[in-house]
Length: 482
Image (cartoon, rainbow, N blue to C red):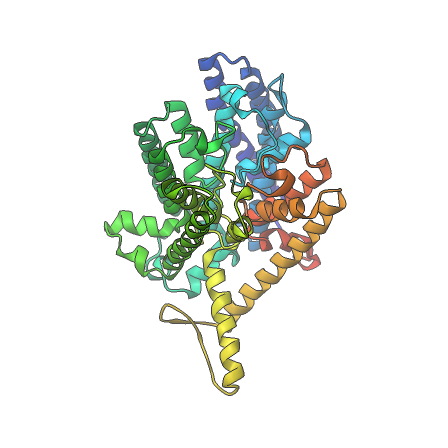
């Protein structure tokens, strides 16, 4: 393990991350909101820490091993989110406590979208911008991590998808080098963000709201510049734009790369993962619309608008809101919330367990049923026309087992802090799936939860964002043996 190389990389990352505090500082000077000093202090602390890590190890150059990759991937989010919390606790009146600032920063960078803040409309403009920017940076980091880095470590949904499942990464790699792949993904991500911003402005948003919401929409984050989220605008056009870009961002960015390079869209419908997600959302929307109409919750048009938006927003783990779905009739709140466990496609900015794993779990379940009928039959699990090896099946079940175990442990931990059962399971599920909204006492914000519960949820956000095994492997004795 190359500790000095890791420290050098972390130092560089911190110095680079400090540059991301310049735009909100300039925004503060532009709007004259008086909190530029918070970002200046954040820059200074982050740069000094980065230099202290980098300078003693600047000559440490050694080829990184897989173990180093795991540490860097975990430390990337942890260290940057901790330093990203500095402006949130330094901006003066209304600034957050250490616990709340770390929670908000982790929620932003992991694109969870859970917030401890009330009165978002009254925050300084630069702080509003900074929250949105955190999600945008986190969303791009997720795509690069999922498509370019985690597969090389042998973990993550794309590691399964890339090696064994038919699709764009199997048929044609994005680019030969990770750096080139990351650059290509940046172009696509930035282009989508710009297109989303322009669309929002044409639909009636101010440039500030359009910029902020384009950041969090493409990142599937869910932060908003208003307490009422997208519902603040009460615009069908804005809701339709938001739905469109949430769907685009929930598809694998490798599909977007193929569309950009080959100028065709047919592969979206040929991809098993993308096709399953579209059918899943269509079915869930139908159930929701019919239930809302039968219970006279809304009239026809409003019911269709709210149902479509909330289904896409929650199921893709974006977490934007135009209505309080926690108050909807019957099993709808539970049904929508559980849909977030599916999440988006591998290699997207969405959270959840990822569609490819759900497909494999369902197909393996059907295989076991068939084996009861035909005990001696050799039945292959297929995705598309390709058989999936048993090693992949075991990896999926291993992930699912770890997922359920961690969910249970963190649920018990949050309940032990005095939180009621509904709030506890929904907040843990929301954090682990990087969703944002929860039920019960956390349906509007997480500010009233005990501090210990918030720290447990911070861990859940990190585990969910890094696909669990990337963090769990660090706690195994075998990892640290020479």
